[in-house]
Length: 367
Image (cartoon, rainbow, N blue to C red; front, side, top):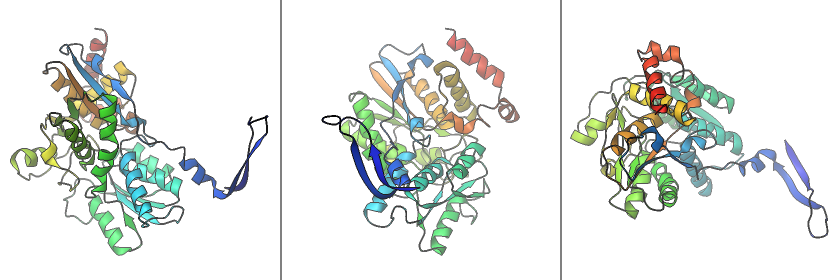
């Protein structure tokens, strides 16, 4: 709704009441000020591996604590702020913004569109968890769900649907997260400086899987500018094409994998592979087992991409000599995957040994 006068009670001077004039400001405009992106906690995950060498720590950057539940709030806020600054977008104008996404970027855009008065069209595919799709609807987005596993040149590939909508509707703005330079720039401006400050400049290893590549590229560029010796590790799921392109400059045909939000079937322009020092592979089972272990031992739920990052971080950390500070990005919340990673029936239907996973987590917890 709208309001023209807000009366703020409280003491000022001799106990006079304070009257605040706010002429005809939509209530949603006031709510925008309450959204706080970034400055997320840095958590100590070292207890997950009691056999770590002396002086080696594994930390997790809790990006799931961003307002929409993922690291993607950083790029959406950054891109919208920049487009509003240059006049391409205007708040509360009803302009249409389109985003293709495996779920988290679209969810963030839907949230910010609700707050800033835009129309949001979110394009995702059938591989996206139902929780993420329902979150899009909850924020009022118009949702297009395309086929999954189609070739990158298919007109129904979700990225091509975004391009087509923008081309056919000149008034639409496409977020273009996979190729926009504003994507890595957002992390260079925010996540990189936060990690440097929170570790007092002691970070030695960054572990961040990629999909658009913006998170790892922008953050790595900032950190390597501060200290060129910092190692950047980009875990890649089996089935993604990144590893073969990074290691051999060979484009291979992607195969299916279940972990969402990392790995890709094409090479985005937002990804700068020259910044990557190590690219370990991981399986869906390794990522999901780590997610379930974190939930049972650390009392927090993270998504599969975070599980892959933590798995890689712990594997790496066990081989290091201290002092070393390894930071893994905890990309999104596990509550987005209750129907998958944390659903025993779904896990069993994919062939994962849930009992063995949970028994392993329980045994490590008892140590």
